[in-house]
Amino acid sequence: MARKPTVRNPAKKAAPAPSRERRSTVAIHGARVHNLKNISLEIPRDQLVVVTGLSGSGKSSLAFDTLYAEGQRRYMESLSTYAKRFIAQVEKPDVDFVHGLSPVISIEQKTVGSNPRSTVGTLTDISGYLNLLFATIGDAVCPRTQEPTPAVTTGRILESLLALPKGTTIELLAPVFPYYDEELDVLFTDIRKQGCRRVHIDGQLTDLADEIDEGLDAELVGNMDVIVDRFVIGPEVDKQLKAGIQHTLIVGDGLMAVRIIDGVSKAAAKRFYKDFGSRTHRFVYGDISPEFFMFNNPESACRTCGGIGMDKKTHPDLLVPDPKRSLRGGCFIREAFSYKPDNWMGHLVYTLSKRMKFSLDTPWQDLKKEVQEAILFGLGDERIQLVKPPDAKQRKDRWLKRKALWRGVCNNIERHYRWYQQRDVANTGMERWLNSVMVEQRDG
Image 1 (cartoon, rainbow, N blue to C red):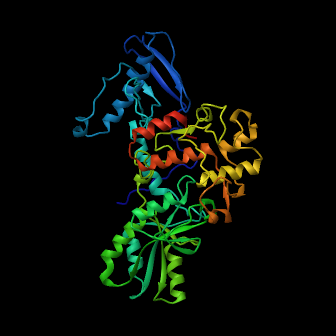
Image 2: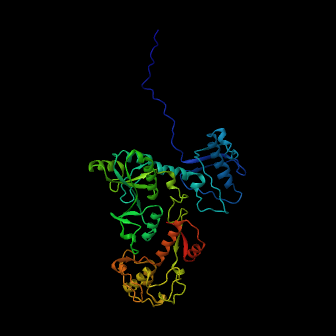
Image 3: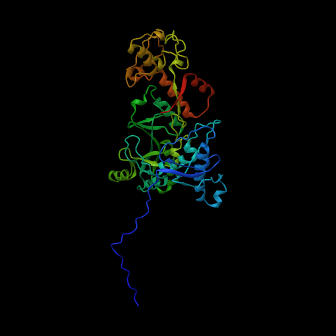
């Protein structure tokens, strides 16, 4: 016998679903921990709440022994019995119930042995998750044009290059950038140390083994790409090519490009570039990992502050111990600046004196305020045509053919300080000298 179908009454409305709105407060009922006398209260969420009161009024009992302890207890319930063995547990709080409590974090106040690299993120391991988030969903862009740039693994790069026709000649290029507006010789020295010697400077091939003009300014240079290696594509070069790719990514700080020399048609090279890298400079990032965003890692930390959030700035009052002396007479401390007409700085300072119409024999305290500012902090982007000092004994005619930037005594000291930081080699004498002319400030 067939069952009679059930007929629902269309006029009868279904019961409304229970509300799942997010609570706007954390409700505590019947807290009796320590000296709390069965109190009930509500604390607003998504706000900064400060618990204040007299000593013994129950501030810590409420914040740590009740709220934090209940939050940890709930977190512990989600762990396995094996995992619980390795986590210190707090006592279950004496409270009726707590509503609206999110995962909790408790930071202990320490007054001894502070570490500037310890933050809320490192203490709670949240920074590790943020690093993973940046590496996973971050959008990589070209540092020169801000165009989208693909981020692929070393294996993918290797596969793309081995897919080129056999006999294709390619160059592996690594983009490099000047350090802290320092002289290019600092960068060139680092390139030589990494086993490279040929650099494309604004499209012109330069051999670092040759003598490079000492007065070359980083501001005059647009783009620089180091030629790390050259290969002829074939099945027998896969291991060497993989090592070359890894070396190129090290030189380029995770960024590289490929230049096809010959062996394929222009149409095939165009298709390769379209699928391989960014549109303009054909860059590609390799193996972006969470370590790229760790400030405790010297390779990825801020090169200005070294990952500690504090930087040093030159204090002008510490540079001129005797303002009655002149520039030629040694008003600056010797390590900061000493006028020598035969070197590059001597040419610059003499040219500056002609540009601003002051004498090198005038006492520092008698110089105009704008002249002192220019000597200390430079002329900005203004270039001055070098003039040979009349007391110079050596001929540096090649210096007189260009306009140069005067950055100032303070800025020069700060560039040397950052250069020293990058070397990451302790030097007691250098530390003592820097501390005598620089003061710490929070890096902005």
